[in-house]
Image: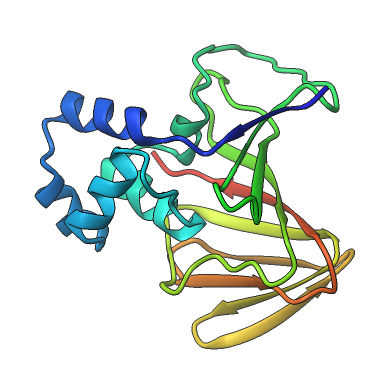
Length: 186
């Protein structure tokens, strides 16, 4: 059975802020988010969008994997279908499934992202270090990079520099699924 948890990053956000001695006001400046938004997320009153989560992880200098709570450091990881950790937004429109984290000096992150019809990454574009590959497994997504729009249907892929501001939307008739692979820079 698949373990699905509500996206609950409040305690992790508070812990890493304390560890790095970063105030909410400083994190707001670094992430481009408001102090109020960060406070609501930290107190688990609201759930972050995908773009918000990327902005927070980038501002804190951690990989988005940090919020998946994987602690192991291995040379090889194997995961069976139905046994990987999943997190979903409180509105249940977006679900991430980590395809593996915890390698020693891991330099890529891989996920599947399942989005309900009409789900969006957020109103503000996000960027990050490294390169990104998205592969449409099911449905139909629209990506916007540098004000250019790309429509991805099943089997289509898009490779781009993570430094480009990106936004996406599920424009399919039902749930759509992406494979996301991000290279990380050290």
